Image (cartoon, rainbow, N blue to C red):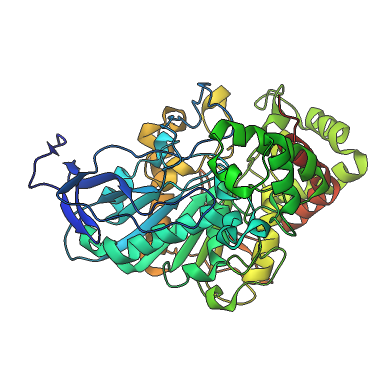
Length: 519
């Protein structure tokens, strides 16, 4: 069936609380791009946008937040990327909907990856909302917000007007959710059924919003994809005075107001110089949420808030995340178990290898033994800590692992971001996902699971085996693979063994990388 396009002055026109917005129709979906949900001055809380007269065009993506480093046009076969136009006036969102009517469809709000310092709502091609909206019959919203020094620079000790500058980016997310609450019904969405979801840094943002009282009541479920992190991405705690003073010294100024007015590239240079000095000492150096009255802290370090403890959460990761390089140089199809065991002993030492190998065989009997060298344990270990704390309070926490190898390099362990096209029903946009007879089936299993969760708060559906929620005694992990199924407590001992030996060193390495000396 041919896809139909329509754009005229009677099509895709919606009245928001600030004025009329004008989108377009494509393939049965109404699409709106670049709608402003707030405005702000640098380091200040977001403010309402001014109302406008007439139709406001919403047919092109809005500005994305300026980044700390210049983007590169590298190969991105595994996760095809796009580059947006950068500008500090980046508080905008995009909406896909089956119809602008009164049907009150479930709403999904995408929080993009890139930690709290990079990325955008359009960065990955797989972030497109058309298929998610069409196949799921939901309303999809993606947002841009402030990042890095613009979003998480704590200048609270330099004046009341900067009291929440260390969480400006999260304040933007709250403002976007407030806009959705006020306006999404006009786009055919239900403000009483909103799911926030994100991958990597986007998953961290879901966790941050759960710990942010100002967001209460604006969402009702959460999906965290490869986004439970600690250590390298700890909260900013303690005074931000040194951060501000070092940046002022670097720029040759004396007040926060002068930082507010400095050219962005000069501000970035000062920020990087400060970070190089403070981050290795774990002194407040920005780029992550600042623990205060607005944001109460990461639940790996402080208690979950009782107000959000019964929010259904689906949390997971991929088999290898960033660890897949561990098997580079080995022919996974030809290597013998004896050769694999020798390589594992060389990497881990004989004592840990003797402990880990039988645990790996039991957890992943379908995998080649050499895959142990490419298995993620950092994300999974932090996820365990999150699950252990949260599922003891409720019966609405589920976890998964994306375990499907991709066809690149003749068979690639599933890396960070590998599950995104499946969740969005966008594998057709990512050629490196395609494997005949496999991709379409696994996409359906994952997509149907996400849709069931979004619509009911429970991920069970006919496409997957029966799935019980997690408890402190039983982690019932859905393993999405060529043969998808539930495995109970299958990898806890294995992950704990590896993380016990290597996690601290890995985190230290990440910290050093994040605090590298600016050029």
